[in-house]
Image (spheres, one colour):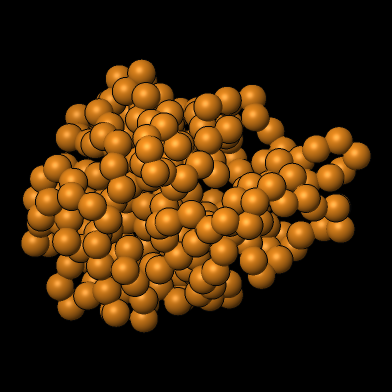
Length: 243
């Protein structure tokens, strides 16, 4: 993460969408803040700007590419049926499928679901806080690429993951490096424009959770932190049902 630079920023909206995001294809839904990056692999110069001034570049190429070593390592930790929550274009879902795992990607974005299916994996469109297939029978639920931030309430999100799991199941979650703590607030996707300007999309609820703060958050969600590990510059946690 890097602090926001001094480039001028223009906001396109101040409306705060509901939990998660959508692509607006159904009546009453809000615009998907990640839609452009999901739809176009060549979409560059897009950032996630947090309300506290921290921003991170959206790794569009990584989302659309094959599973990188860190994701391959997560696949190896999945021994049974797995939900890829907030699957995006589906690189993890595809990697799980090719490894012989039963895997389903879940995303509120119709574009994400279409791209995942086009790569030969199974994906369903839905809000992960609403009814999903096989509730209570999944061995693993995975939240990578910052998806622990979905909804802006990590405790509620992890509690929901626990409901999706079978007894003894685990949540594999990507975390911020130690020191970032827990942050909750509003975020926006920003697109770089000419003359160094940043065009901001609508605000939505988001969160960040680091490798230390995950312990009390997991406990509040009824999960136990079984492992915290590092792959290159990225950090992950394994959270298990039961204390």
